[in-house]
Length: 385
Image (cartoon, rainbow, N blue to C red):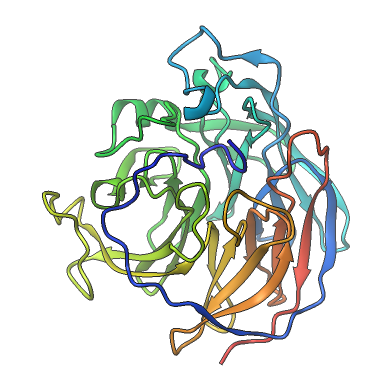
């Protein structure tokens, strides 16, 4: 099993696949500037109200094996188990002067038998509070007393507490389709979205195939079970605009380029309905109302200052993830998918800064034994038309 832990080797795919649109244009390649380096599996990143850039780091796992302790993620050809867990996940930040410092440490982290890592997956700010999505917790990841969940973090003192137990929720609320080949009892949570308009947090659960909505420090509910109509397509990332959600998916391994999608999710019936036969069209009020293919291994989606949707691809080549073939794409108003940044190495997260520039976590899924080579790169993007 190569690449991210939650990448599936299952042989079954989604029943419904939209027609793909090939990449048809290439923007002028911007020159990268290194903002931070020496990071340990950097993932999602966000700018805070203070103007500093906060970076989630998965960490390096630990030494506590999951073997024989609880329901285990499959090993061998069907999965990555056993994991070795620890508390090496952390959050770092780059201040406005370019100084890199550690914000908080001690978060659950886990490494599978192939070297792939789970830990702090993403960060977000809601009403001035810093939240961290912790994905390396739970017994199945070698952290029996340290579940996966949402942590509320004090960025000044570094103190934090887990305010939401996501491990417990997914165990008590199974999705419609759960892959028997790589089922993760504690899931492999990846993206965290703070919706100011709704005063809610949204979490993407790739392995179980759903999006959860959370009241900060309060109740959890299923916003949409993507697996119910799409099967095991491994949703990873989420963005919000004009009342709509946009969710990108990784798809299955080995990589089949240009068959990953960005799906538009909203309430009501609009656009194209792509519910599979036998599944209820109404699930908690949210539906997949449109779907655009033409992408490969989507790990992040975001809207740029130009109003266009930008998509980060982990590895845009057949087979398994490779260095140097990660990309940033954007969807032009005509619908054409345009390359904006190429030559990235297993990138894992991106965000636009208050300066209008694009920030990308590079070497976020570096090979096992590569050490702390993760970095954040900055790109001055020419706006699309």
